[in-house]
Length: 240
Image (tube, rainbow, N blue to C red):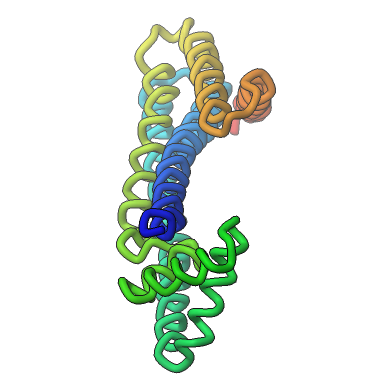
């Protein structure tokens, strides 16, 4: 009977840790994907108007910095809001445990019973978890929060900045390093290959079929580059 009550808390912690790691991996893949698509669209569009290497480099660097800073700022704000919500939920749970301990014990028992434990085992588990650390038990079982691993907005912002930058470097280097006559072809092919890899990676992380994810990624990137290149070509032809 002693081992059984510990299982719910142990499972909850493992599930939360795994989910957190997968979320970080997905965010990294998506951030890199955004960097590839947005920067590729920008430099290919500029390439439609001019083949001047300095202009392409300036546009690409501006897009890289603007995009990475925007991603980092957006992630920081989003995760800060999530962290504030987690702290508020923990504070409210702490107040309820202080003011209504019996009601909270009954609630924890119900939650454990809903996870498949018998009523007797759920009650015993709830009592043991409450005696050990009531707030931690409710945070994990009721709220799905690990008090020791609250979301960190600085980590999220840094990860987004880095992922976007890494993704953006590919089309930037592809458009400025090759000879003028090969720049567009090298950029388009390298970007489509990177998008295919990103689509495959995101599908694997989510246990989803790879083919639809790859086709969506490649199709979206190809469309973005086609539209921006057409716009750049028209503007270049018009002398803008």
